[in-house]
Image (spheres, rainbow, N blue to C red):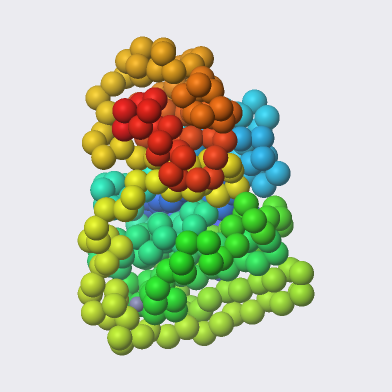
Length: 343
Ligand SMILES: [Zn+2]
């Protein structure tokens, strides 16, 4: 199909003419997390004609996602988000190369997913992985776009090589639980759309070849009607872009347990990647309850006799990563995994 009619209205905008459109077609982006922000960002980038979109997300579509995660429909519930997003985006524009990876972005995997990427977009639902993405991008001299949405608050900031970076603005991640999450504070679809729109507004010109504007943090609160652009400056003492210490990328491994936002669920990562396939996992779990396979994962309910009477549902990915549904306590989740999976 001739792309000219598809992008005709965009081409009329200053900075998005023929040469810019060719640059977009030749560019690659990473969508780091495909929840609400990632859905909206990816949708805009594919429609804009970005040639290659790499989506990484570890989760599956849940009914509570459908209020704001705009690439998913009721029929996608239970499908990995990356897989469902790719199907939708390929329907939007089959000429775009969309790659879907059902995986966590962590210090072991992030460099691989950033390989060949011109601009990374933050679709995370927590601060810690943003610091990891910041470390990886600053070290490689790769631009990325910070993006966050909670309740009625939306934020976005383009982080360019040379800074200022995320740690120039917020030197340290807040303690776990210090900030609200979509689980505790909620989030509106309108907030998501504003944050994602601001991210793409900051990032798309970079892909199209424009020189970015003055570094700034876009901050919106729709509850108060506050729309602000806050100037940010590089901190010469920044541990990341100043001192070149990449503490999130090079630090010690974490506990392996992560409470999932918006869900009564905990993710457990195995110390060593599994070598089992779906059938192998099904056989392993045969004693533990009622399980079925599909889409590269095994799902089911754990026999309450193995959980101290708790109603626990388990999703196991073939790399051995597990999501324990029915608890937000990492210790309980770890105990269930230890008992049922041996990890
Ligand atoms: Zn910095």
